[in-house]
Image (tube, rainbow, N blue to C red; front, side, top):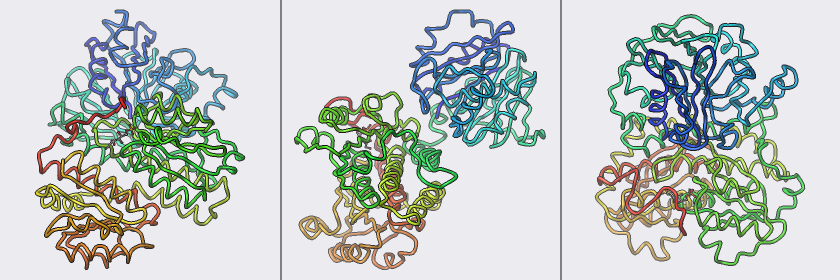
Length: 612
Ligand code: F6R
């Protein structure tokens, strides 16, 4: 989620790195740093804040240097501070590294490095273990040392290193996090994203998982995991800088929708114990006693995060057998809620800065409740003021309409439910194992939903939908909050007036609005209410409404009752909301596109709502 850039050539590297980092700031912007090879030493500068803040710390010594690496950070492990900013260096400051990704076994490696190998750490990051491990294996060949170091690391990495003893050389490794080599004339570059390369070259080679590279001004060598040289085709980039920032997509929203399989994988990473297969939320400091005597949980959030909270309520009640109330933060803070002993609050906020959510958090704490925050931004106000924090690790979300943050909030709530269920003994081993295996299958299922065929189908449907000024979303049980989120997404970016109804409520009023051809999107993923929802669909059909159903494979009966149907891969009903949200996001996106709306920055809305 962070940004990496490295350069070897004959130009002043300082300006090249700063410019490259500015192009990558949309990937992470809480701290930045550079490391340069200078007269047999490394010059390292880093600063919390923006790349502009880093620039202020530069002294001029950096000028005339021609090889270096840079990083702009989106914090995961460790707060956004100067010390935690990359590059990280080894004990004797002979090696510096920048890293994107997460090292899952960093605690065990840190323990070994400090207790057995005598290393001293300076930061709270997982990354720093790699600097020390490389140092431990280093005897003059940086690539060999990196190969040995990463063989002990579990997790994901795009890793670039320099050594003061090997002037002119950068070495890199990639696993589950992108790295692209930029090929120049008498200069070569490495970056995590194409925007950082475009000012210098359009000729690139993309590293694959398990590959390593050694880069200097006059050459690039790429090796596979066994150390054999790899001959790669050159990929010419035709995107302009704006398209490159969006990963080649037309909008950040679509890019972020497409990033969801990876975002969900990151959220789950390290939170399921590989030995006993159980959920392990080691970052949470609740005692077993606290969890056992819990009588009520208050979930508080705004907008999309509130919809995640509604699903969280249903899932936690079911799995952890504890009563949950879900509130919109702006209501919670003024309704004088009954906050008592043996209760906790969970606040959910992508930005961690939403004024109403923050006020609700403060109120809950003032009344003596312990507060758990689920947030995407390390160091945000919500994360600082809560007692416990569970980060969603979705990476920066730029489009105003929340998509990948929402999905990772949902997954985090499932993790919390399973963690509570385990601690309270309210879930049996078989059910728990089934749900955990279902959670692990989500990234692959999300990829299927985001395949080209599915997307084309949704796009075609949106041609019809976009001609209407009004639409309905309906569903029962867990499908109802998904319908609410689908309606919110559609209205905020396409400006089509959309309402969500519990399907059983239609006949209590809204049915009066159903006219010939009006779009009705029905969520039908819950077996327990399947027949009931089908009856509600028939009520709509009878009035001429055009129903588009989102259902699971195996629920083929639905196709006979509706105009069009979208099938999700079959999954446990409890987990279906994670999948069914995605077609609703794409429906909103393509409807907005068909109506020429400003997708990433809808009118009247801001990404972070820091006012009441
Ligand atoms: C809608 C959307 C908003 C946010 C809400 C809360 O797509 O993004 O409804 O969910 O403003 O924001 P956070 O999660 O930052 O507290």
